[in-house]
Length: 80
Figure (cartoon, rainbow, N blue to C red):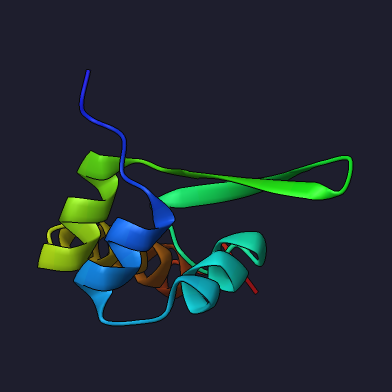
């Protein structure tokens, strides 16, 4: 299992404030983590491996594959 990555550590690597990252996680803007509200307190989880792939752009290959599949489906007339 990989080590835990805190919001503060990830924000420092990204060059953004921890609050910016927290709000992005709450709103589902980042594919490498999530935020869950327990009662009145938010908890954050960042997957270190997915964060690393996102920061290095490695996950862009999969995004290109999905886009290509969508284009193929559209050109075949399956989607409106």
